[in-house]
Structure formats: C-alpha cells, structure tokens
Image (tube, rainbow, N blue to C red; front, side, top):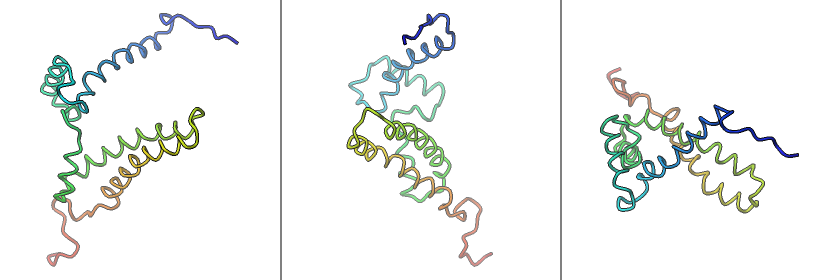
Length: 156
C-alpha cells in the first residue's frame, strides 16, 4: 500500500524539525568537529566563530578540548571539586549510550557477530561512567566535603 505524502509546507512541525536538522548538520561539522579535528583541518571562519562564541557566552562545554583533563586532574589530586561535574558527565554519557546500545541490540540488519563487536566497543563507554557515577555518589566519602570532619579524627 502506497503512503500518501503531504507537502512539507502543510506540516509546520515537520518543517521546523527539518530546518533544525538542516542547520544542525553543518553546525556540527564546522563547530563541534573542531573538538576532534586537528587545527589545520578546520576552516578559519569556523574557528573564529567558535572563539567568538566561547568568548561571548563563556559556554563551558564548547572549549577547544574535551572535558577529560578536568576529571583527570581532580582524580589524580583526589579533589572533591570534581564530584558534581562528574555526576553531570555520567548522566550525559550514559543517557546518550542507552539509545545507541538499544539500537544495536534491536537491529535487524546487523549479524550477531556485528552486534557483539559493536556492543563490545560501545559498552565500556556506558560501564565506565557507571563506575564513576557510583564513585561520585554512593562511593563518595562524605567526610571529604568542605567543612566535614573525617570519621577517624579525634576532635569530634
């Protein structure tokens, strides 16, 4: 049975969503891509646009490098200051991986071997943030927060 297609102009929500994705594609390639591409592979005006935006907005998520150095520094130095940013990071990464892993598991076009390989590649990106989330919530030593007393301190 053939579907009856309505013109996009008759579907304002679909038109809006289509416009969003049309704008989103070059933006992702030109702006977000700078986080992973070497500088010589990025377009000069796109670098200028990103520099302007970060300077204008102070957006902490649009810096030239990923957020990896901050948790590394905090974990190495055993700093409680990374607790909240780490929780946000875990929430973001884990919720992003749920649909990816679901799609892989439910795919009808992938073979079992392909599914196992891809899930094996993606699963650590869910499991490791889950461990970090545990560490920053249930496994976090509350005494390390500012003003709290260490449980083995003598001045209680």
